[in-house]
Image 1 (tube, rainbow, N blue to C red):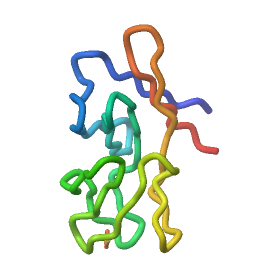
Image 2: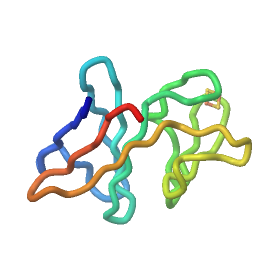
Image 3: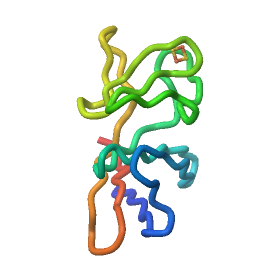
Image 4: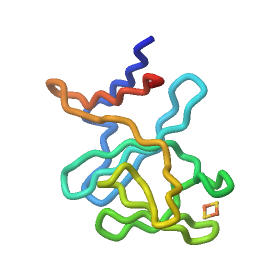
Length: 103
Ligand code: FES
């Protein structure tokens, strides 16, 4: 089943910022990194901390709980091969569509 989250222009984060979106039972973070949007689960794979307050340096997001770092450009993986679940986010007209479909 396709699960699409539509994010209108007025909800999009400014460059270098993020927003927390809720859709059904999911909490999703949408980042704007130099004009590119990245959508990930708001849950660190280490022990489930929220990543909302994580430090963002370029495309690297650091978990605020224990400091693991995740590359938003590379499927949100880190050197320990843990990965935050990432979702495709793309423009469709005036909105960003985040595809939350299960694979
Ligand atoms: S919960 Fe994220 S590094 Fe531990």
